[in-house]
Image (tube, rainbow, N blue to C red; front, side, top):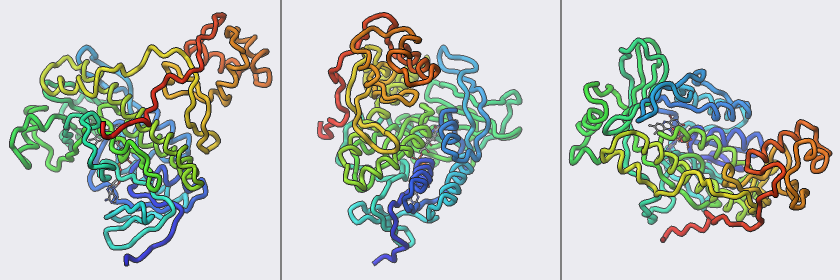
Length: 452
Ligand SMILES: Cc1cc2nc3c(=O)[nH]c(=O)nc-3n(C[C@H](O)[C@H](O)[C@H](O)COP(=O)(O)OP(=O)(O)OC[C@H]3O[C@@H](n4cnc5c(N)ncnc54)[C@H](O)[C@@H]3O)c2cc1C
């Protein structure tokens, strides 16, 4: 029998941004938490959106290795020049900072490989033979987590096979001060200056272009195909990065977080956002599962992962369509996963029921579904939206002053004004009959049939 290191409320496999953030939040929520992970083995740099930095700051989590936001240069079809901004993230420092925060929050961190996660036994087995026991496990080993159901081979749940090769390169262009993203005939390139002499250079291409070549020759060939002329870095970091809906269903004994649930195309720049925001759902899900509210947890998880996967897959497809190239690399990605618009502009505001987080717990609530909030919005400015709309009794939305006096007299004028402004932004028009109906016309993403 494997020697047990301890029994915890919760044990987590994998300490990337998803696992470490979840560990901190679960420990702060009062659970005893263990986390087993291997540290990053090589340097790695990524672009972080300001939204991620803002969430981490709001939760008092460290931003180690995160540079200030800087404009990103884009060369992508008709988009040319400075567009958006991003923070350069040194992932080794960032991940180590979050792991340190987990330790500070009282998490028992085990710097060890995980050999097996056994949900039914409530055990995480470590490669050195030790074993962590817990009432609930979380799987957060990123893309290295095993697939949830290897029998599911639906082509639309895995995007086109794609490889990223990255590494340190000498910085020659003295005018390169911020990161760049560039579409090339057979792939795309992301580069970011690290200091005056060095650049992080990432080439993304398709293994399909390589034919039968294997090993290092294949890497050189792919690098050459995308970048031409520039030598392959001496210790390249190679990743398979096809977008993947790995775990569409909740395992109530071992929910998944981050890339272990949904791995997105790095082009989306949404991977770290998803990792961190999925970690925010760990404590509400744990509370629900440990108190027997499995169905609430199942519906919540299932909606979140399906929405994230489909929306980001379609947003990515639209971006691939803008590249200006029509080689096989771009054609294949411009047609996956389907032709459904990324943003449904045809949603009339209406009411449905969804499982939402309220005061840290999962609860089924009526939500307002709009183009902007297709997954449903339950609260705005601290007020529950649907009961508020019911107070209007089918009348037209009054102007801001009347909205305050008739619908929300107990709120401050500023709060009432903020909510009124939000309603206008969601498609409600002052003075006109409120265009809502109460039928739930949404399809339920939980009704996903793996055999279909
Ligand atoms: C090449 C590339 C470029 C990317 N660029 C961006 C970008 O620019 N912007 C962005 O937002 N996202 C980007 N992403 C996505 C982003 O990296 C991920 O979405 C994010 O890291 C997911 O976090 P995670 O915690 O779920 O998984 P990970 O970050 O993968 O963390 C998993 C952790 O589990 C550990 N682990 C795995 N297996 C074991 C094991 N058997 N035993 C012990 N520990 C284990 C790993 O060491 C790691 O610490 C990129 C991804 C790739 C591959």
